[in-house]
Amino acid sequence: MIAKLLRKFFKFCLLTVLVFIVTSFAVVGALRFFNPPTTAFIASWQLEHGRRAYQQWQPLEQISPHLQLAVISSEDQKLPHHFGFDFDSIQKALSESNGRPRGASTISQQVAKNLFLWNGRSYVRKLLEAWLTLVIECLWPKQRILEYYLNIAEFGNGIYGAQAAALSFYNRPARQLTPWQSSLLAAVLPNPKAMSAAKPSDYVQTRAREIIAAGRQLGGTDYLRQLDR
Image (cartoon, rainbow, N blue to C red; front, side, top):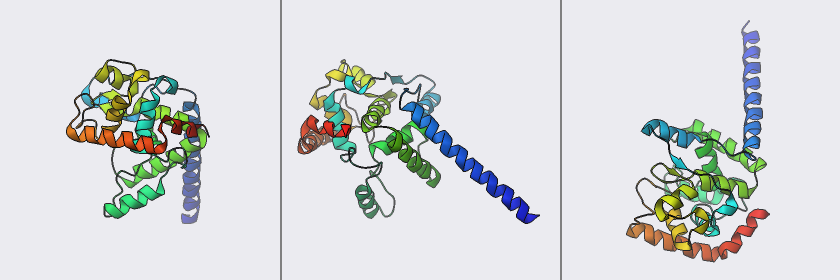
């Protein structure tokens, strides 16, 4: 009797895992070609504040290459080359934070988290993030991953995506952002609620200059061509 129940339980677990895998690939595969109506993070913010967040989706070619380079320089300089995870950064973060990895997430991981998951540090969420990152890397080209990131990242309280940020802070579309404006936007990404790209503190301005320097070291906007490979 117990053996029979265990077999049924095992079959149920196996079926659940298979359904989850198939569903993951189907949803992520569809989102390669269709823009999402919202994200988990945006929906959570709207529920918390009782109003709509500000977001206007823009294709990657309508977003300034200076901003594309700035977020890569700031958040994930190995984006064209890794398969979702920067293990060197993870190892460094682990060694510097007593076993609690911080600041080691790639752009791919951040897209997986912001699009599908909730904020937090639980092992379940991290496992789901890792799985969804792998699926995204399997099914999406790097340019699509960057496009998602630039459209769903939070740049201010309730302001999501490059277009909304550019219009809100600089009264211009995302395609017209200057290198300095782009670097300021990238500088606030770690904590857009505490830092402002519209009224940047000394720290934000210093960080922006560092991002510009890092972009130059990568080779400038020509580095973006590596996303095509």
